[in-house]
Length: 456
Ligand SMILES: [Zn+2]
Image 1 (tube, rainbow, N blue to C red):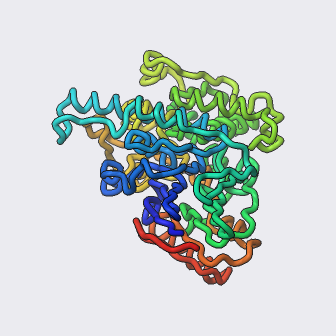
Image 2 (cartoon, protein in one colour):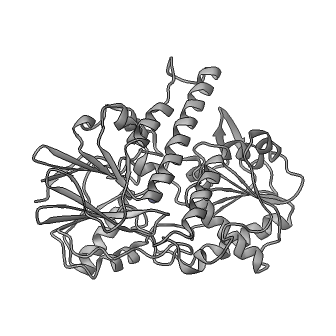
Image 3 (cartoon, protein in one colour):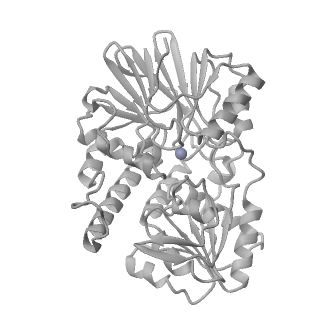
């Protein structure tokens, strides 16, 4: 049996891990590369495998860097099942439809402005491709062994990263591999902690925060930024991932307003995708075996800070370009790579009284990362926009385990033959691998992009 690292090796995005044996192929995650142009270009290259020969995809969760390549695979001939939890299926449908729509719009816009280097700019995938992928979703419950083809089987476990997220154990014969997917932290304010992985012959673990420690929860940092901005009459603009981050940020704003740490101002959520995702979160609160902690599940309105206004239409959205009062504005995408947050940035960045509060990991090469790194102007819709607003990068909202939490998660397991450290910028992956060698004496390896290893 071989394992190939077709993405999230040397970078945090593009997760794709291929297991092959006896002419059967299982792909764990099918994510898009995001951020640096050199990585994004790889989304456009011919698929690194023949999609029609893949038996099944095991999908850990609904983030685009884990599910966003599914429409390309489906269009290019993949017709197997996509195994995931029901909540992952619900959220991934929203994510893929939105991604297709944004790309179609962007291709149209680029065509109309003549800014493209390509003669006929086209989307990487369109709505029809997304629907083709969505039709392949097969929701399963966790802790159920699912036969995948050949001698392969899969089992999902709670990962506590976003709603529905799982880590996956793939078994063939007596060999068990555990893929962490994105692993949540043990102190997520809404979600229950990750389950324990048990024994594995090989682990494949993420290292987004492989060189860092979380310090607290971001609530104080957020409170300070919101309070300062609102008191000087400004708009606090929060680019937030629609899936997970928006519900989490709303929950935190609710707490800050209830405890009087932040003035009670209108909170707008301007992202059609975030509204759809919020409905999925709301419905999942009362599910049996819910992913949510008891405190969240027993709160009738855990995502409503009080004066919550959900913005659906584009006309309403445009009105927020020039709000007449201090307010909090939450909009996607979280790394400012697309979506309605772009036109809000165009209008809010040039004004000193405002702030832009980044609430998630910012991939290198994205506008969010440029802002976090102190850019004085950023290019949006073909124009350079000056950055005069206060930029606050709240680190504490991460939905990823930090290095110590990852090591604590692995520690009770018997030593595997190998632990492959993936899904991190190179220094993060190396830092986590070094700690795994030193603290657990495990055989920790950082695989290269497209590297293939034997895992029997
Ligand atoms: Zn994720």
